[in-house]
Image 1 (tube, helix red, strand yellow):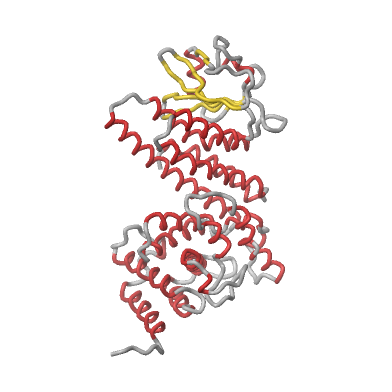
Image 2 (cartoon, one colour; image 1 turned 180 degrees about the vertical axis):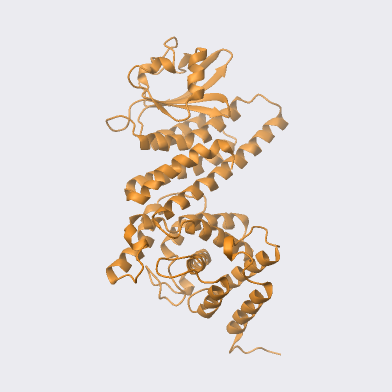
Length: 437
């Protein structure tokens, strides 16, 4: 992962790690909306729009993330050293454009600021001069926009939508978006040939795709904070689901969507008492209901969010449904479950079986797969299971495009053993059928 994204992921993790101590569901929804804003900004930045139009969208996203009612986006030029506003919202007295000349110490302070900064107690002069056509006292918070070691702009926020100062959570949410906005400002400032511009846009797009995936990876890690013994579960489910989708021949967008859904499938567990994850005995009826409710709680968290792939909420709700209708929360049967739901349901169960739990040990890979074969088609889609077996065999022979298994599971089963399991599954599915000669 590029080092420039490290601060972003740390901030995401800090926000989401409140999960471990009982995060407020509204706060988590807010952080998720920031991720949604990240996804929405990507296509706008790379699309053929006039920059002021893009700038308005970016400023709106940053103001929403921080809960601001006043904001302005500035671009930086170094000859002479100056900030010039591109767009603003909410300010009544801000000139258009607003211009702020900077001394070398101001530019250095903005470039050195790693996070958004609050302007309190007379520290305005550390970052902004009084020589422009706008009074720095109008601003309450500054988010410098940097690409590498280059200052490219600034987002300045005024008053919050509600009373009071910007909180640490506001600043974290704002910081999540600064890398995207900085890249867009940098791209706008480039004065290069067409060939160079195309190269920059390709690098930009690759960076944004990587950040989106890494952002969800950070959420997956944070979701599992409560699980004393199953750290990495959501990441593995995302990897398994994507691999199964690839084995089924699904297109790259579906594969990426299933990976994201796997990362977020257990997000409703933020509302479950941490005690239940470490309990060594069976859950009583009330405890089971609380645990089972994570499917509907998770659905409520993500249902109104516009992810790039539309099936995530459906999967979050349905990943504990089973083909025979014995699952929860809706008791749906095989014909009522979409293929993506069936894929994540199997990926989730496969990881649960092959991972350590407080109430039982890890099942060997061969035993877990044998049990899954026994449960198909009553509980699981046999075609989905066949795709999982195919990908594990590719792992065993070194022909997988993306390694599926890690640690003690990797290379723990010979290709011939996997072939035997696949033959068992095929025989089971064909048993009792009549074939024409």
